[in-house]
Amino acid sequence: MSETVRNAASDAGDHPVVRAGARVGYAASGVLHLLIGWLALQLAWAGGSGSADQSGAFAQLSATPVGAVLLWVVTAGFALLGLWQLTELIGPGEAKDKIKSLGKGVLYLVLAGTALRIAAGGSSSGGGEQTSSMTGTLMAQPFGRILVAVVGTVVIGVGVYHVVKGARATFLRDLRENPGRWITGAGRLGYIAKGIALVLVGGLFVLAAVQSDPEEAQGLDGALKALLELPLGSVLLSVVAFGIAFYGVYSFGRARYAKV
Image (cartoon, rainbow, N blue to C red; front, side, top):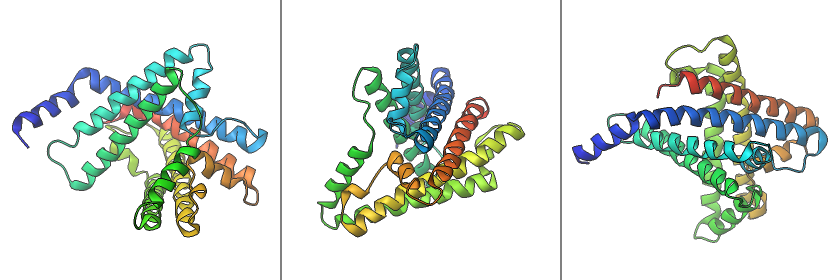
C-alpha cells in the first residue's frame, strides 16, 4: 500500500470532524441500546408490538417530537464512527485488531444505513424477515447449511468474547482513562448482557442449520423473544433488557472517554 494512501487514511482518521463524529456515534449507540432495552422490557411484561432490535429502536426514536432531527444526528454519528473504524485498518497494528476494526466499521455503517432509511421515511420493520431471507439464500448455496452453522458459531464466539470482556472489565483498555465506578459497573453488566443476546442469536443460526429451516434464524428481536419461551422467561428477558440498557449507559461514558 502506497505511503500516500496511508497518509490520507491517517489524516481522515485524525480529522477533528471525524473524531468528534465518532464520539457522537458512541453516544448514538447509547441511545440505541437504551431504546432496545426499553422495547425488550415492554416485550417481557406488556407484549410490546414493536421489534426489540435496531429497526424498532429507530422507529421508536422517529415517533418522538424531535425524532426526525435525532435520526439524522444518529445517522451522521454512526457513519463517522464507521469511517473512523475503517481508517484504523491502515497503518501499523496486529491482524486481529484490524479484523475487529473492519467488523465494527461495517456494523456502524449498516446502522447508519438503517437509521437513514427510517429518517427518510422508509420501512421500520424488524430484521427477523431479512435475517431469514438471508439465511435461506445462504442455504441455497453449495454447503449452505455448513456456512449458516459457521456464521452461527462465529456469532456465538463474539457473544462469549463480550461476556468475558464484561466479566474481566477489559473494555477499560478502549478508554483513555478510568471513567469511574458507575460507568465501569454499567459496562460490566452491559457487555455481559449483550454477549448473552449474541449467543442466543448465534444459537438460532446453528439451529436453522441443523433443522435446515431458514425461519429458525432470527436477529436480536427473535433471540429475545426466544427467552420468553423459557421458564421464568419474562424475568430472564427483563434481566437482559436492563443489561442492554446498562450498555447504553456505558456507551455515553465511552463517548467521553474513548481513545479516538
